[in-house]
Image (cartoon, rainbow, N blue to C red; front, side, top):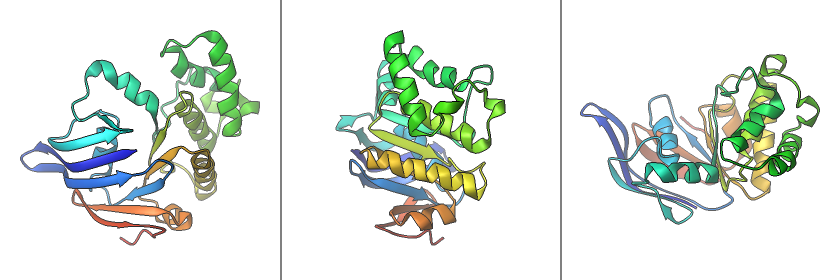
Length: 226
């Protein structure tokens, strides 16, 4: 599903994001990418969604070589890869329903399809009863659930969660992880990028550890040991 071969990202002469990274993630896996700040986790996310290009090496997603993807193909890639971030990125003037719908509207989807998809994804994240609320009327955990719902509207094969629990307390963080596990059970590949030791250790799933831009550990049903 995801293959990185010899990936190096050199920002400047003195700034290295990733160095000679080889990584294979199979369809349906749940993988945690861990490491301290500045180890390359964010660089990895940016490369996967083509926000950055590698200096050398190859990246493929679902058999599609995206190493030098053209700008016109990036929207197609991002429909295959859903992304959620630490800071939610919701539109404050739009309701829950409108925030999720907007992701479909900008892709040119018809109203009929939007009316079918949005209630479905809101039910998956447990917010069907709050579709008319605005972001400021929701808790942090609920806002992150809206962001997850928005990431699911194109039925992505891969969901990249970049520090999704970073702004949440332990109870809300656990709720978000349970939703990600449920989405994974539907067959979606989950790439969880995090420094949250508690979350990673309770998952008991594959853990890839980055340090100074290199993979130093890749273990099944592992713990966050750094």
